[in-house]
Amino acid sequence: TNSTISQRNKFGVIKVFGGSSQNAWGSFGAEDNKFSATDFNQNDNNTGEETWNFNNDSTSPKQNAENDDNEGNEDNCIECTVQPLVELQEKDVPTGTSDETKLYELLSDSYSLSLLSLDKLYNLIFMQLYRWGKDVTNNPMWKARSKDSVIEFWQGKSGKIRMICRENLTEKLRLNQFVPIDIKLIEKDEISCQWGPSIDETIAQEEFNQGLSQWAIKFETLETCKKFQEMPRGASENNKIIKDNN
Image (cartoon, rainbow, N blue to C red; front, side, top):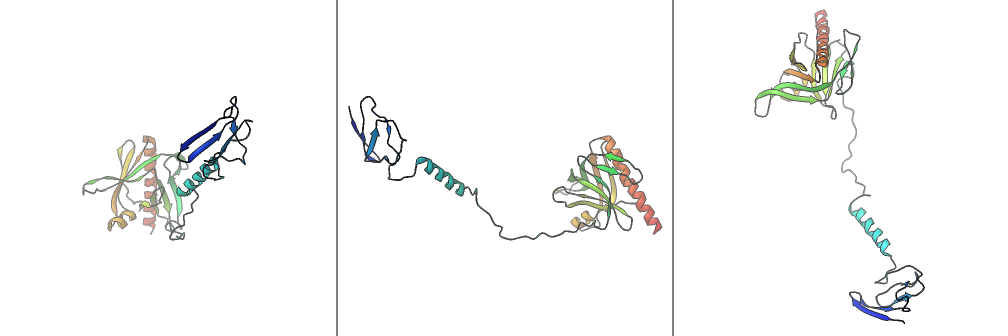
């Protein structure tokens, strides 16, 4: 038998016109037979898709969900384009070594070292560079100057050799000094050594003095520490010869 069910909810009165008792609910009507809050037909043929439309709106729940996602994307600025307030032009910054030749280079993990007096290639590991100075409480101590960075030896037109060290990311100079002709290398322990005093340009600029400073460097192994000590000594002998000839 056919049955009629009426139920009041927040949308108003919903009327349901049922089919036979054997197929009491069946399925909703065809696409053009929209469900409404006041008129809803139940078919017995079990064909068609269920369609809900409480406000005479033809937009499906799936489309509404997609619209909500699009609005959320706009709120999250997924497709937003941000323009800079000020356009900065790239500028060439002088390195100070454009007219010099690189002699050696120490890299943090894997690098080759060519000595002045030896035709050998070494694989060394550089860990930490320090300088002797005062901390914020004015107490003298070894201060970390650079970590896992690069130490390079450069020779200018005059023939004198200097060594420099830059930060990895910023390339800021952390060490820049001509190798002293009477350099004194002292082993602090098996994997570190120190040298100085030497006049460093970076210290002179930072502290507004002559840049006289003590330095230390640390390696992973005794072997690499020993090999490093040959570099400044060879450069020191080279600079002494140039000074004597002038």
